[in-house]
Length: 99
Image 1: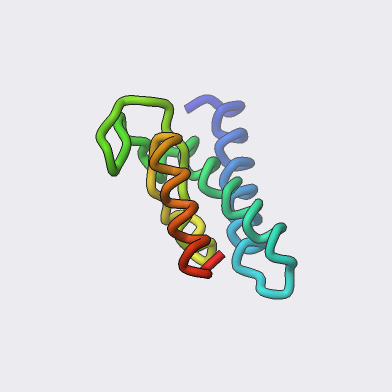
Image 2 (image 1 turned 90 degrees about the horizontal axis):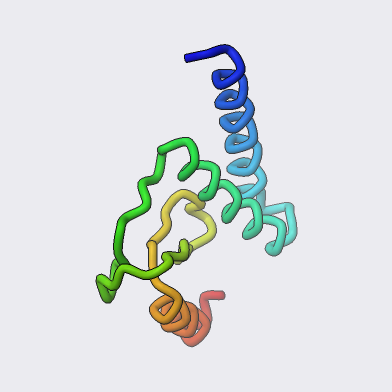
């Protein structure tokens, strides 16, 4: 691996660690923790720690997929859903009073 690419990978890993720490820090406001959890999941996907499937986890349609966090306390635990299923999942979370 070339030096420049290795440096970019190390910088992404450092950002991932920082955002994981922020997302788990209960002293931070909830909106900051959730934003950091979303960013950490995106970075983990870029680094290859999370693999993006080809189809929706629920309906198996091959549409544009979105990451869905069921629990922001586990930032790297995501489900890939299409837009329609993501709306349903969000309404399930809001209906249960978790969010």
